[in-house]
Image 1 (cartoon, rainbow, N blue to C red):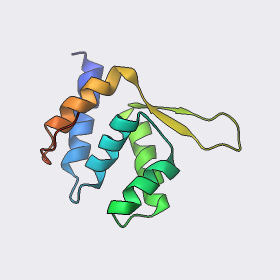
Image 2: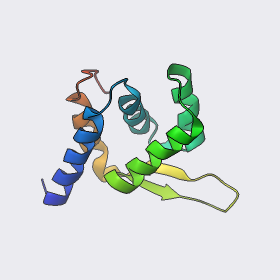
Image 3: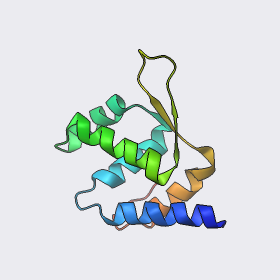
Image 4: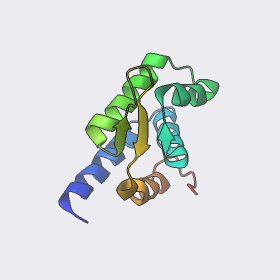
Length: 108
């Protein structure tokens, strides 16, 4: 594994280690399963299970995009929301980290 990929893997592991209530795990699992998300879509998913605000979800997606670097952001026009896509080269990496996460939930 390249040095760059190992850094991303370690950042993702650290991100999930700080997950006290399962929100981060759910975010990563949703991104992995959906592959394309918007903040609104993720907020709809998370608000059913957790007490989160739209700002909180937007902040989490922004952190994952900028610090973890596993998402690609695309905006078709200024009127449309930003669509975040899980980069193909990190799909298996995310799956493996989620499998080993402390939540011990199986990822398909």
